[in-house]
Length: 335
Ligand code: SF4
Ligand code: SF4
Image (cartoon, rainbow, N blue to C red; front, side, top):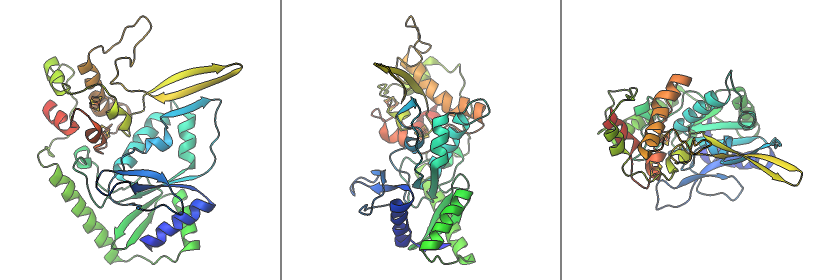
């Protein structure tokens, strides 16, 4: 179905009052191109940019919050819509799903957040200099992993439905709006837009090789090489915190009189204290080892364990790094 963009936003505002908590990407600062972040939608929300490029904040914020009480369990029942998610972040949710809801292990909190969350994705219509989804064999538009997807055609969205949750939203749309039917011509326009975006991502990354897939990085590579690529790292943990596929945590027990709470917080494998055990021993005492650990997790361990790439090409770790370390350059050098 085809919907005017302004009608679609009006629809989101209406259901955010009646049925759902809705989160949308909002441009915070017209001067800074990268400065788009998710905000809870209200009737006064302005500068909504549903289909530009990925937001600053990773979508794991909604499904795997930075600080979360695990025990006693906190019930969350209000249904939520995260609208405007891009394909790199759908791929990241796919990684988290594999790690946190599988045959051996289910994270009850994550599963609950997933159940009450509806995902409306959108094709990218612009790219950032750090975007490199093509390098990890993804596209700047989604094929799967969404409930509804939005593809812009001039001042309208082509809305694609892909799940039961999507059908539920479709029924709500039909109750409140009068969507037009799509045509062959529309499909071609969407395909042309997508092709154009692929070309833009390719152009941005032309100095990096697209012919080579990421190969497992040889564990025995010289220490000098890892020391060289990690030279500017100051161990701030920014790259892991902002990464949509990183899910390492610390568990903390808190007691107060007769109350007990178990709290989970994000951890970072880049910190010296990560994986430190009683007696003070740590498996990766040197910074270059911790730096290597992150790359090996993204490009070897996650693919070997969950059969998907641990990096989605979102480029956030490049934007955030105070040492100006670019994951594309590091991988290229290591290859
Ligand atoms: S963001 Fe950069 S400086 Fe900070 S830990 Fe990651 S690689 Fe190191
Ligand atoms: S490693 Fe960097 S580019 Fe890859 S998913 Fe994480 S933040 Fe994005």
